[in-house]
Length: 277
Image (cartoon, helix red, strand yellow):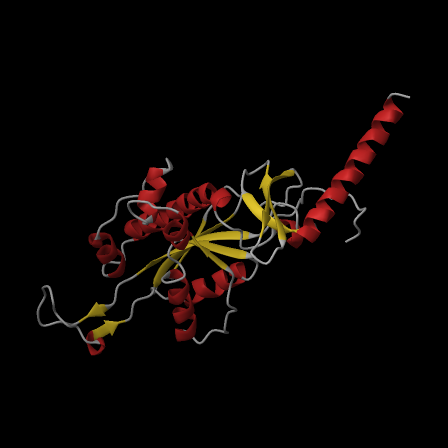
């Protein structure tokens, strides 16, 4: 974009989708029960499925929870959620890189639905492990630790009522449980944001410059420190005055930032002189 063009904080944000799934267990035939038993896959009489998928868009109030149909088939739900996921710039989940996404992909494969792309994801469990030191990296613990509250209580009897008894009341409770998890997830993610690198540059994706805050695209930023790499390359540590987060830009981007500031100061002085001739 032209260096002289006035840059505004973007009106269109990164499309972040927060989501979570709840799944059913395999139903198996076994001659005995207890610890240390090996149950072969040949014992499965009904494959596990996805019971419900909860999701919400960043900044929106409502959580949508999709559920399997009256025959406990998750195909239609998957087809509907794929359309939602395709609109996202980022999909945010907790332990989703190892659980939710493989489950989702496997059930799509099972139903022979069209293949899905490799979505850009942010896993708050991985962020918790890499950048923080919590006593537990479970979402329930982190959410409560940060003051957002705990999950709803559940036990295995809830799954039995849903899968075996087809209890509508229990299914509704499960969907409520899933929806609340999505809200807790978004709250935790927003607490993490100033401390972790951004996966999508909010400034560039909305037509801005690299020196803008990568998290929210804000132009209300400042240089906090100058650094020099081992190769002698200048880098500039920036801080966003809106979200408080830090990020690093190159010497070229820093030059663009200084030129933008000079242009803005010139426009401001000109506007003041018109008001006070």
